[in-house]
Length: 262
Length: 210
Image (cartoon, rainbow over all chains, first blue to last red):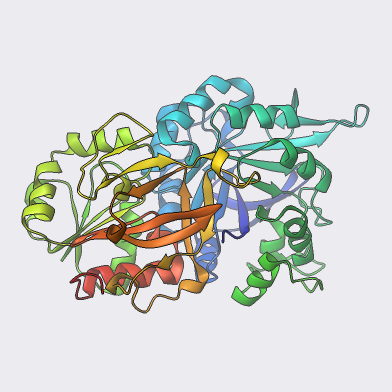
């Protein structure tokens, strides 16, 4: 039986690993390759690496860095950041990356997203939707450029449409919960889940294994992604790469981990 | 020596890294000459069927591969799209496959699966070998393998099915016909289980199924 995926999400800026809070205040955490090596040993299910600068700076993806990470990575790898064209996506897959994550491109040019999915296959195309709840309308909107530009697209309808256009996975990233470590935004997860027939991953806010357990318990087989949870330890957020061992992971995925002991 | 075919598709580096760590002699083959020294080959592959078939044709390796596998009867392991290329054709495209294992590649059909089945099939799932095979010898099947695909292999002959996986309904996740092996999952990305399987392919006495 297919089981849930528990996924560390690493943010890269200036070739270094960073962590943000609500998409702001990036704090340097360490070298991405070292983190990958440690995650290799921990046999993680899958890994996401997002370059948070590429789109904002309007630069090409850092292929050398991506190649190095892919070469080191012993688990399925998803890369996102600055991908705007088919040739970039093809090149990234060619470097040994399993999935390409698109974000701002989906808002700017959904036709290209569809073309990329057709060429490299739906299974290799993820769209990451950075969302924020509109306080007035209560609806979730998609933001781009590190949470600075409001696309005004309704996240739920947008997600549904993207899957129809061939996107193989939707990753929903809560800007407001990012780095806060007080739990996932379950509400947007529910809304997206209801309309999307493709695999889904939730990111933003996980503060404990209990949060992952809660997500899996409610949604069954799903991707539970986290940044801070797997990179920090303790109240003072000391940097410590961590990940549940096989036994813990099995309990989490079976929905039997109920007691929170991060 | 193992040759990993570089025809423009698939995670050659990941497969090579595993063999390097295991101390298994391997080479990446980009031309027919580079294939001649090999005793077994790995045919990786990601992406869409037509594109992969096109890349294989364009690589100039196709005939050499056919000589190796069909005439030479030497072991080949197709991985993911590399396994799908072994079929006659795929619903994903119009290209003709290698046709070395009778069958065709089909798309998971949502209408015949439980309503909440999400596609593509993405993540860690279990493989149940249908017979005892050197390919799965000593592999800890409990952790499963990593799958990432929307299409699957439909064997015409029951005896070619080596392993099944359940996703909504059982589907063939591994095939074997004499010296020709194929796995739908990614052993190069499946940690210890995958490493053991790749080791088996490289070193085990591959004589057939029991």
